[in-house]
Figure 1 (cartoon, rainbow, N blue to C red):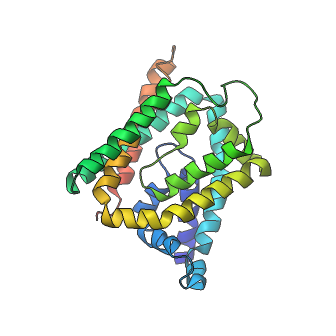
Figure 2 (cartoon, one colour):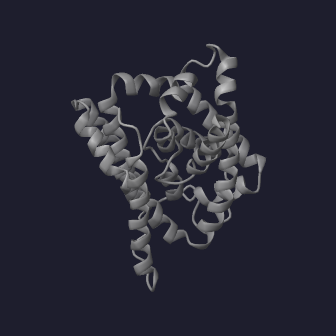
Length: 268
């Protein structure tokens, strides 16, 4: 039963890893796996066999979920990009009340609010800067370094609860090509993404474990700044026609789903 649950959770976490606003680490917190998993990754060479037995099936299932999710999202995003972005913004906003509760619970210092301001300001700066690495609608051969950075962003979202770098990828026009490349099992896309994700996860696992143990207030405020600023990166405006009604409804639905999921997260 535990193996079956680990496989199911792995698939869901892998799929959520590509969803803006519902990053994989959010589900890890909800499933009660975040702390044991980051602790294991922070010290990978301490009793490695036991860790492989415990978390190996989970990681295999997460990889499968990522591939399945890329196929579904590639189709959705290609056909309904603006509507999907409104849904994703709802996912992100739905996590804000929980973050605010965590802000009130944790001790705040000037360093925490500095992290909030810097991360939110960085997102606003990107939103103001209109030049894109990959212009929308143009078929551009993306350099492998960009895919490594995209993988690093996915890895960051897998380690830091509430962080969804997918909004940055959407802003620069990288998100859709990434989904299509992963869905088509293109090694030129998958290999550098996997490399970037692995490097960030292994590098930041110990840092995240330490941060949420010793500087939780600053970490929570930094995440809040990134969440609030990310909305400005991808706001697509209000579309004409029937979408003028459906997009706000999707936003509300996304926020409701996100808030419902956060209610099931275990409280510290």
